[in-house]
Amino acid sequence: MGTLAGCFWMAENRLRAAGVKRVVGKRDKRLIAGAIAGVEKRFLHIQVGFAKIVSCRLFVHLCSSNIAAIMGFDIPMKTTLLTVGLALFMSLCAHAQEKLSVGWSIYPGWQDNALMGLKLEPGKPSFLERRTKEAGAQVEIHKFKEYTASIDALVAGKLDAVTLTLSDAMGIPLDSGVPVTCILINDYSNGNDAIAAPKGSKFEDLKGKSILCEQYSVSQYLIWRALQIKGQKSDFVTFRNTPGDECSKVFLTAVNTASPVTVATWNPHILRIMASGKAELLFTSKEIPGEIVDMVVVRTDRIKGRENAIAAYVKAHYDVMKYLTDPATKERAIRAMASTSELTPADAPLFSEMLAATHFYYTPEDTIKFMESPELKAQHDRIRTFLKEVGAFKGANPDSYQVTFDTSFIKQVK
Image 1 (cartoon, helix red, strand yellow):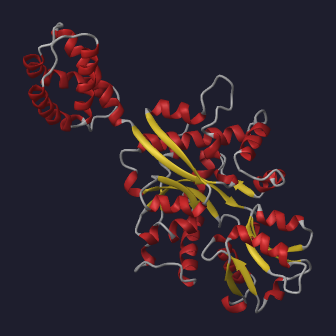
Image 2: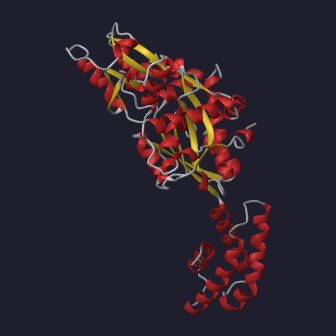
Image 3: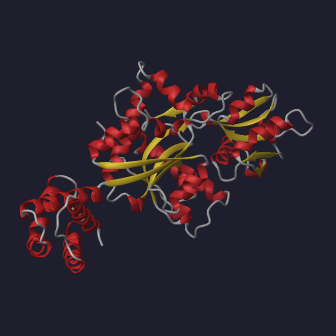
């Protein structure tokens, strides 16, 4: 039985509870269920708004003659139809309301996902609540402790959208046969990623040595780019696959031994390493601005039918950006971001340094300019070349991999 039919029986049960003596029998219920199901199929596609109201009235009109003959309620038919019509209208509205699920993991550029759901001002709704109410849509924000797990959830169809880097968009969803569309670029790393070696080291000292980094990650991309810029071949160093959040622990354990190591990782791990006073930064993402890109993608097959929800999410993002840049609320915004980042008390002061090493696209205009730029297209192709060279792709035709960039939702922000 469909949504409308279920809502009809809910109305009938309420009438029974109100003391109406004659209610619909089992045989009659089957007849009404069939009548409703037939009409239901013709109206589920109608959007929320005036057309929905008209469709509901038409639905009642189409069903009323059969309902009148079958129901036999001991109340006026006008009241019966009004009750049924209201129940059906509510059902239609609930059924057609768009719903978007977004997954995110902790990173300065993605903390907006936490803030947009908070009531930052007393007596006022959250940014996301206000925007979804305007759009007549729902947006569910899901926080993941593990970055890769959020991307896997997108690939498995458990999420509609997720926060990730450009390289991982190509290396995981696309390589798994799941086309994705970028609806928003949050930022690029402007020092949050780095290669750290023992104090006093120089880049040329790395020849023939191993660098610890997470395989196929932006850390390996950083090394790949560093070798290009320094004029070195790929065999100048070797890689030892190590989870990014383990690199700082290994570095700090080995730095005082006869076998110190060099690592490539991201913040806050780099900041922890540098705080020891025993490390040297040999190369950082500040030297390749606009290349390590953080963004939000939607499964391309989940965009249709969720346009209003996506637009509401994007608008809520820029509400957070405005809150973050307004001198009157900036410090409050930073404190809120830090409180949702799950940093240890010892690392909490590092959050402001992480923000400083993140180049945000604060306005719709700046984001659109970058998303539609030839520089981003060139970076997209460079990332694909990198992933091919290091053997990250498992698909048959990686040359065809293309992340779609869609600025239409950002252009709706006013």
